[in-house]
Length: 348
Image 1 (cartoon, rainbow, N blue to C red):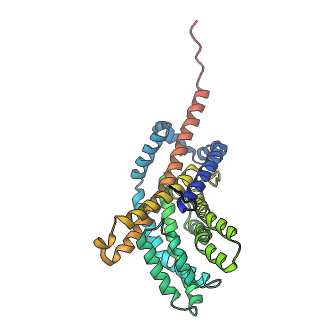
Image 2: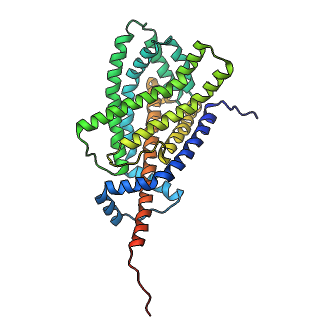
């Protein structure tokens, strides 16, 4: 059997191996600093947790059980639903902005053909829904795209900012901290993170959608074209990891947190998002039929389900990082307690 090396999943899997390798090295270099910062930033909570919380057992299986237990206790499914609602509100204004900006450089109709490249991670109904909306936007002509871009940008930023606030709330629950930032500070921070996420998303989607159109327009050599086409999927995964790094660093209300580009949680979430998205897309295409249950809303329900799953994967990735921090803090305190324990001399 011949293996298709340029399949998106194979390329993404290779990039995922690289991400996890970087995460392992980065984690080993900065875990001690991160633990010290975590303990110093929350001394009262640290001592309280030390008094009432048993030391976590090491190992992958105990970690997985703690992640599942905390996911249920923190009600992350409800948080993911809130994120899904506001994200859905921001999708279509965002498409208006994307088509408007893309129309400055190339024919907006081209984007409709390139969106099909995402069918391996998005359910078929979602692709059809996006294609229908893109068809409506592109058939409207270019005369109204200027104002449409401005209105779409403002609407998309507001709704995406609400989704970001819901994500911040979920990350606070994951790390068991209360939101102490003022309304103005929190709003500015969520706006900055939203803008950063939008930029990274545009870069990631450009690797999938814009690169083929640019290559066709420039007409470079065949080997150069193939190399860039192969590289776009790992670039998409790196873009996802970058977005998660921003979320996991600035989302929770914590101070003196060591910055890391890749953590075990972000690497896990990036890889699991690809796997779960592919599995859900395959299920919808071959087994599931939302139209029989929801009628004309089947495509919308399938799209919302996929976004809800994506939000859950992100929050679970953050929960993995939180549990790893608890484990490392417990080991550090245990080692410190052993070092400070009084020395009892044997009776003579």
